[in-house]
Image 1 (tube, rainbow, N blue to C red):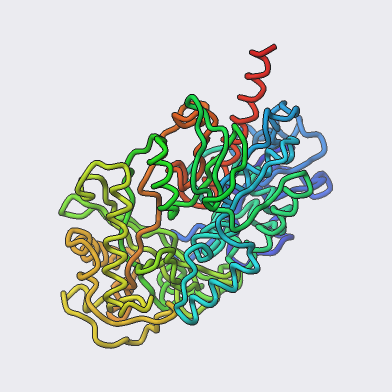
Image 2: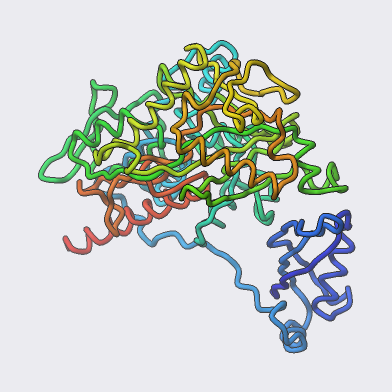
Length: 534
């Protein structure tokens, strides 16, 4: 196979035109092109008057060496196909591994271990997707919160109720493995080549169910509504976990793939002597605009073109006060959702369906905070800091899980909002206009104000007076890091922290990759231990 970089075609091009462009890049006629596949598709939107797609393509051709020799440029090279290599270990570990948490990290660790013959036991504090979805729906419609079955907890983890983004800043060949597994589990094939792949909350549920069935088919076992409430540690090694405070499951290999909202589990691990450190995270709001406004700002006259879909954006601003603000987890054509997992707190997040066709688009608008703001150096000080602002938002919203909102124009003018304008908030169960300065730190408010104005210079209309700010967003990343060594073990032998809740990932893709890496380490460690014993 030959790899061709930077094949550029205008918006609206056909498949035949792409094939012709591939032939042109290779300097061959159509009869010499056996087949081709798109490895990467991205949109070049730098010039609003001439949007175009840019492709990376792998092609099978006749007389490959001759064609390669004739193209003396960086655009054509030998293709290196991806093939994930499972660790060679196949013999059973000394005990069935236990995986705590069925989010992306837990599912992909479980998938690798199950396919390696280890029959993992998957413990999830929440419910299976079907039951979880009913509980989430009730919270959205009635404001009735189940603290163990919600947007944060349950099969699939928090990513199940999101945009299903699969973008990441990490560069790891395992990313391709994750994408291929997700396609096998029912995700659209386009995620293999789109530059900004997403699955949507509707399709990711199908993927999660399929991953569960695959793990079960390979000997894994899921136990829902099984919250790990204690550890059994002997001579510095884990030997069992306590579940729901009443039963134990013996294992000397335990992967903790908990989510970043597992605050009671953090308390338990800290009390058990597991080393942890406070970690910076971010706090802010969701900003919501009409989808068509964002589409026009990004795509100009091409807004609404069927090949484009809803537009996204990603921006950062370094403010005069020394802080920075940035947009995060942008949900084109999506909704703002209630993401609380504890009684007495309001938390927001963003969610999109695969079609991304809702009336509004929204994004987190965040400011980084760290131990200096937490007030003390305790490992869980960031958790207390999060809870402080979530509680204030709950009170400001009327103590009914309604969220406090403020129009951008009012926020910039330091005055409370008293009514909703032309942009209708999508958050359910409802919103209460007010003053977000009452549920955000002063420095965060000042940073956000400057950033909104700066972002509007980059993206026309961002400071739309009636755009809605919904508070508060506090769960973009974990405020805790569970310390682990280069074998992915904590200071307790056999206990392996993984994923976002352990402080080593952020988002679906990086969490899944981290789960794979931890599972690989478990298999390699098991092999090494037996080799040493023999």
